[in-house]
Length: 237
Image 1 (cartoon, helix red, strand yellow):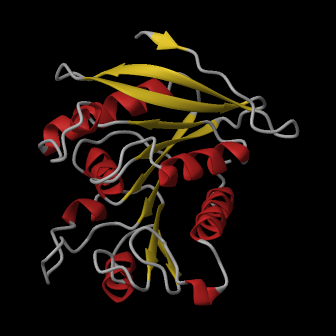
Image 2 (cartoon, helix red, strand yellow):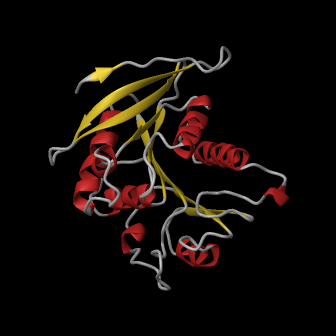
């Protein structure tokens, strides 16, 4: 795989180097990835997949990637093929999963354990990668798992989630129609090792109203902190 280095250091106390990589999927797609590598990295790394409407360079993705890396966790983001080519409609699932698998495989060359995390669709693809295809992961973290499709009233099938034996963390906002906390709570209860974090007043992207006195960036940073704490509690760090 070709690699072009775009190194940078964000602060002197916790330097993180970010490199631009190229990934090649088994179905022939070539996409861009970005690896944020702390100078003193943990042996657990995060693969963070983007949602249907944003790419890896969206401010949401960059903030969450950098927040994980600032905690010492090597973090890899990537574009799915449709995003890389500038198309708006997501690829069919097998093509999405092929790119996702290549990202996980690449990350495995840098760390001992991989946490598959994702925003909305990216998290759902991570769950299918493990639940349907048996990919290895130490844990999964879902930021706004899209259980209820847009414009639908009924949840989509989640049988594959039951097949995942690894710890799963679901994060949902109280204003998220795709990941309604009450519905998510019922799902989480049925899973072997799962936990639900509910964020008051947050929407699907964890934006919160000004009246809360918090910014969306603050909320996302707190969620990364909670995710890292959850990983530590599960002895994965």
